[in-house]
Each structure stands twice: as structure tokens, then as C-alpha cells.
Amino acid sequence: MIVFVYGSLKRDKKLHFYLKDAKFLGKAFTCHKYPMVISKEGWYPYLIEHKGRGDYIKGEAYKITPKLLKILDKVEETPNYYYRKKICIKIRNKKHKAYAYFVKKPPKYTKKDLINEF
Image 1 (cartoon, rainbow, N blue to C red):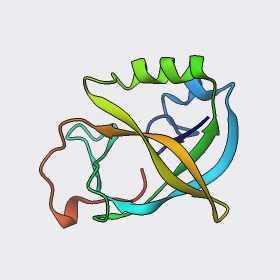
Image 2: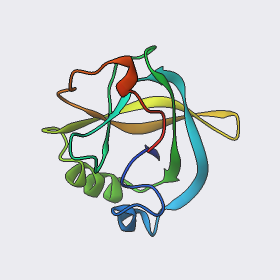
Image 3: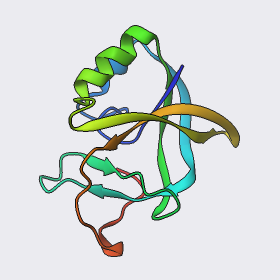
């Protein structure tokens, strides 16, 4: 299975150590536009499930095990803070289905708050 990460789980970010044994598949982009904003604290981004709004999100794709998926669910506080959903991503222009984490209670945002990479 594949997971799409766009925030603190990416390489060179503070939670990447959880993916140290996962296979890096490459840089990836969402197939559809989504809004993404930075948390008030500025430490991590929120991906918001408003498909078609925002921008194509840049991230990374990893092949993971079911055991690691359960660990990532705990890290992302699923289902209380984030929830997991399969979305379409592109790795080297090839489409794949991957799990992504969306914030459960999206903050209010304006167009100027949106980012496409963290």
C-alpha cells in the first residue's frame, strides 16, 4: 500500500523517522486540487477535503506495511484529529491510489492562506 505525505512526515521533517524503513517511491503530486493551510502554530499543514479547490499538493509517496499504517494512524491521531482516505496521486506522471490524511475539523481559510507545499 502507498501513503502520500505532505507535512512533518516528509524527508528532513521532524516526524520522518517513522518512515525510515518504508520504501521511498518518489516525489508526488495530488491528481486533484485540494486546499492546504498551515496550522496556527506553524508546525504542520492541514490538508482539507474540499476536492477541486486550492492547488495540486506536492508531497512524497512511500510503500508501507499494514503495521506501519496503524502506527501512522496513531501519529496522525486518526480518527480524532485527522482521518485517512485514499486519493489519486501522481509519481513521475503515473497515477496511483494512496492514503492521505485530512484534517477532521478544517479551519476557516481564505485564498491567501493556501499553500501547495510544506
